[in-house]
Length: 121
Length: 121
DNA sequence: TATATTCGCAGGTGCGCATATGACGATAAT
DNA sequence: ATTATCGTCATATGCGCACCTGCGAATATA
Image (cartoon, rainbow over all chains, first blue to last red; front, side, top):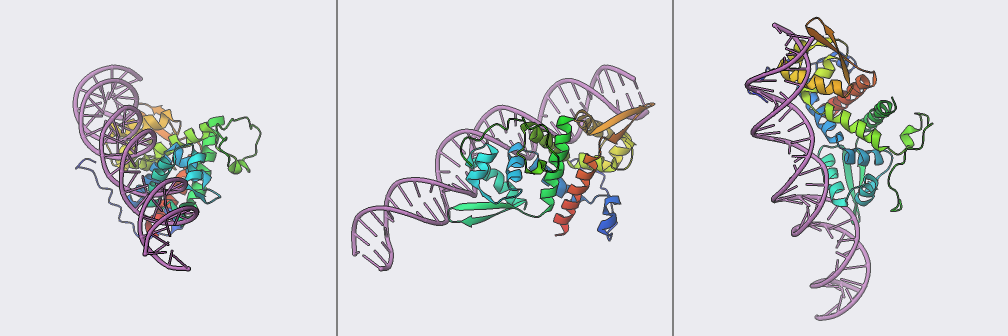
């Protein structure tokens, strides 16, 4: 970012989430959304998250489903885990991952539905 | 899951969107979603798109809103236009942009609501 | 004048590779 | 029987390298 960036001084603080959609965006909100979008901007991660949409799977299974090597899947899962999008639980030698929160699920559905519209439209 | 599951041959044509969410993802679908996510993985573009959520604005206004220079805003708008997320119409010397399709709107709302949850949670 | 396009550069990211950590099973020594 | 050691499988991590992307500056176009 340039040093002379005009800071969007939004001092509105206490608003209901009901009319949040009318509000301007806070920097943290944009940052969080951008981070999530950035993580979703990868085919392998999308396939991994989609596989985790309705199941808890280990790294090897996710790798096979996503069509990548377990090492690569592990790297992606580490990023997703650090971002709080997934959680992993040890089960013996394996680690079983699952989605964190319901928002991501609906977000994925919405996005891929939108994508399907774009493809066939 | 056996080892012999590979290319999602896209022969399923007539499916209801209702059980689409149970389907496997096609490569084109993933590609389209990843492209969209990639475009949304930028703070300036998110702010631009959010500003276009319920209004039609020109480049200068969008630049001021997004906190960037008009040149930069134009570059972002060019990408968004090429991807079909926005459309621009000439109005004299200016070009007025607007969102294309309702899916993007709901996707933005969903994502930023998710982001807001992450921030305050 | 307002937008658009092109080019060059710095920064970020995914992948392949090698390696480390951790857990389970088997086997052998005490 | 206990435990110590080895080997292996599953996952995680660090490194180097191409590749992509956003910004700035200059230029073109309407």
